Structures are given as structure tokens and as C-alpha cells.
Length: 173
Image 1 (cartoon, rainbow, N blue to C red):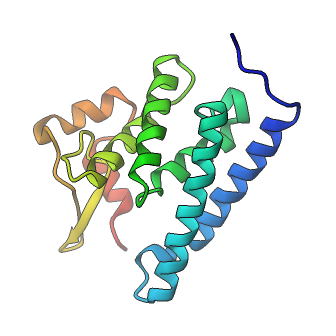
Image 2 (cartoon, one colour):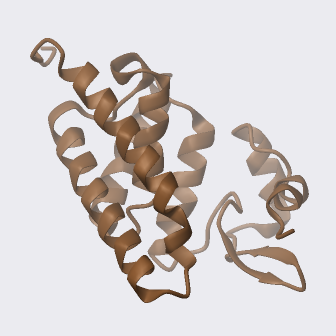
């Protein structure tokens, strides 16, 4: 039986998700700031957003584009990506996003990034090489990968550009 929802629920949720993503973007410099107060502000913001996403997922499942629109669905993904200090929330998001991708209702690329982020946060090797661990001599270096020789093949399978192209785009300038 399909779950019933109050009219306007998804419009409100969509607006809330997009506002959280905008706030995340505005505060993102704090994630790696040398200023501890900025780092703390970032951590509190991402924790609060993760908790709200968790409530929404408990009530509605994964916020797909058909549920909240493409911009808000992308915002939900970003919030899940940045819920690094809440492994339980990231894991729930990963499980729900996996089911949505399998049902053809979400993007496999987004799933790959969240999958890698979750693995790295659990101290395990990533699959797609999406998470950069450091920059050495100006070159981004990924966190360890399960199958480093197959990274580009695995990336192509979910619509992600080759690692060298990706890192060239994200290299410090």
C-alpha cells in the first residue's frame, strides 16, 4: 500500500532541502578552514542538516526527483555526502539511494560518490576513486581504492569521467 502524504509536503520538503544545500555551499569553506570556529560552524551545520535529512528519509524514503524535483533531490544527495560525522545517517541514505537507483528513480553517479564517501568514512577502500585524500606536489591523490587498476572502468559504468580528467578539473590552481 502506498504511503499517504499531506498535500504540499513535498513542496515544503523540496524548499527545505534546497535551502540547506545553499547554506551548505555558503559555509563549505569552513570545512577546511584553519579557523577552528569556522570548522565548528561547518560541523554543526552539516550535523543539523544530516539529522533533518534523516527525519525526511524516515518519513518518505529517499527524496527522488519525482518526489521533490531534481534540484532538491540533488540537495538531498549533497546533505548525505556531508553527513560525515553521522555514519548511521550516511548508511541509511546509501541504502535508500541504492534502492532508488535500482528502481530507476535516481542517478548511479550520485550513488557512486555516496558509496565511496561512506566506505572512506568507515575506514574501508573506496570503489570509484571519487574521494580525494590529499594533494601531493599539486596532484590530487585518492583515498585507497578496492581495485585501483579498474577505477576508470568502474567509473565509466556509472557515468563518471576518467580519474585523470576528474582530478585535472579539481586540482588546486
